[in-house]
Length: 132
Image (cartoon, rainbow, N blue to C red; front, side):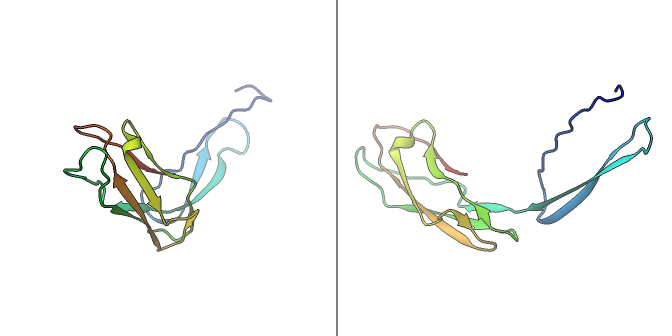
């Protein structure tokens, strides 16, 4: 790199364990003061959903099933913001969700999402419960 030039280094934080994580970026160069150090830190939170899938069997076209419940749990040490919960995918209009999650989920807490199935046609129907 020539004198006066700069570059950007992008980082993505993809934790594989819970908690406050730290590391250091070391940049070795031929200029004075090498290496350069940049401190890195992040707080990792893990969310889980249970069960991982729902199966609505034998529901007549146009009729609504009994609800099935999905539990969202925050296993981390910090509050997590929830911006949206919705049903997405090809047959999303066949499914309805009502959740008790609000806009955040505190450390060590859970909330529930109820899902109903009202098939609009015969055959296999599928969608995804998306949590942002």
